[in-house]
Image (cartoon, rainbow, N blue to C red; front, side, top):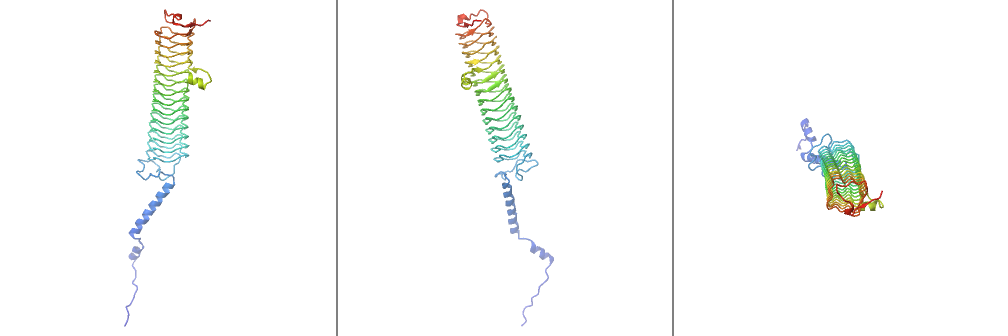
Length: 383
């Protein structure tokens, strides 16, 4: 019996191509593996762990999740919450309107970068270089800016409530209209800074250098300026009600039309810090200021200008007011016990109820018409 005849039929070209195609299930698996591999590579480049969630609201030019952080990149409106780019060179980088909540830039170089209208709440910028940066209208609430370099930075209308700027260098920075409510600025350098109309309510400014700074129209209600340097500082039309100026150094400081109700400027803190020298406010302009209930005990106010000022119930006990100008000032119920008024001008001043016991004057002192100094317990100095 003849067995079945086996014979190899020729294979068409169409069948050959079909055999080369992978199974659909295998193809899908390979795609998933490729995607996972590229995501792992992205995370190894230092991109945020949550970068894939939501992605950036908008980026221009650079995808922050595909390239490592570098100077000059564009992160406009990017979502960069919690990134850690500490000790990184990011000079000239654009973070305009980016979300950098709780991001870390410790010791990074961000000079000349743009952060205008960015969200930087709780950001860590300690010891970072921020010279020339634009933070205008940025949200820096509760930000850590300790020991930062912010020379000539633009912080106009920035939100710096509860921010820590202690020991920061803000020389010549622009903080016009900035909100520094309860901010910490101890030991900061603010020489030449513009703080016009800034809100410094209850801010801590202990030991700050405000030489030549402009605080006209600023709100410093309840602020602490203990041992601050206020040389050539402009406080015109500012509100310093209840401010602690104990131990401060005031030289050619401008307080014209300033609200100084309940301000404290005594020599006690200065005595502790300066080995016995009295607090100094030589040549200060207090004209038309409200100094009711102010405290200036043991203070050097030689040649200061109090023209038209309200000094009701203020205390100038044992204070040097020689050559000071009190013309047209309201001195009702003032305490000048032991003060030195040699050469002072009190013409047309209101002195009803003033305490003048042991207050010194000389022949150059000018009193209101019909005023009898000896009858008030004052002591005349001999020429």
